[in-house]
Structure formats: C-alpha cells, structure tokens
Image (tube, rainbow, N blue to C red):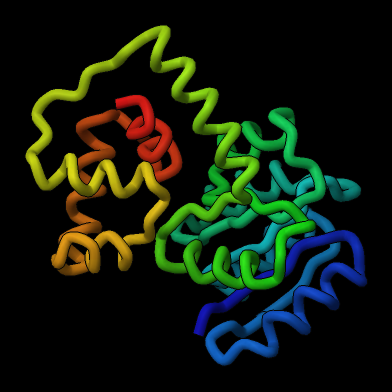
Length: 208
C-alpha cells in the first residue's frame, strides 16, 4: 500500500482527493492537514510514502512545509498539486525538494499515476510544466554546453530513456534489465552529471 498524506487548505479538494484515492486498492490516505504547519508533525508521525502538497496555504506555505518535512525524513516523496504552474511556484518547490509538480486541472488518472510514480522514485510532472522545464533546459544547454564524459554505452541508453520521461520499470522493460540495475545506473548517472535528483538528471539529459 502507498501511504498518502493530503495537505490542502480547501476541504472540498481534500475530500475529492480522498474519494479518488480510497477507490484505489493500492493507495491508503493516512491523514489530512489544511495547512503546512500541521502537515510537518503529521508527516513525522504518520510516515507517509507520498505527501500531496498544495503550495498556497495560510500560515506555513507548502514550500516551507516541503523543505521541513524532507529535512526530517528525506525518504518521503512530496508531490506538489497546485493551481499555480508559473516559475515563481515551480522552481522554489523543486528547490525545496518536491519530486514532482502536477496541476489541479490534471485528469484523475494522471494524478493517480503521479502518486504511484512518486512512490517508486520517479518524478511526475504535468505535461505543460515538463515542456516548459525542458525548453528552458535545452535553451540554457545550447548557450553553455556541458559535455558528459565517462559514461558507458548502457548508461547513455538509460540517460536517453530518463530524458523521455520513462519510469524505472519502463526503462527496465525497454532495455531488458532489472529495475535494481536501472536504479544503479541512475545513481551513477546523477554522480557523473552532478545532478542532485532525477528531475535535474532528466533536464540534463535533454541537453546532452
């Protein structure tokens, strides 16, 4: 079961998310908070696998809450779900450690897929947000190219598939290798490309 904590200041949003998640056999909503201040101790006590985090909330906002939750328990995956997809919200959320960024107008299946992907270490993004990130990264890389040296042929294969947005399982299936092997390659790639997380690695890959 994927243990999920819902954090949003709107009761109707939380109720809708709970109904959606409760209908899934592999997702268990273990708690709710209507502000970032309460979410921090709840996350420490309930130990969720994934926190669905709103950004604009009274008191402690979602970005601050994300940073503090991850400081106490780095293994937690924080998936942002917000109305605001602009850079002023996106980049601070990623800097705080969010593993993904979805918009509230996303289809239910996209949100459920995002929860499952976040739980296994992937980084789900709404398509329009990911497109903007990629375009910015490609533009920046074109201006200041950063060559990658010392990658094996298999690492380059994995890097290409990370750039396509494939999950670890999908990469394993495509390359006919184990998921654990994929994780090892990705860890090595992050070290070799100086990418602190999978999101940065995907962006880096787009510019290679």
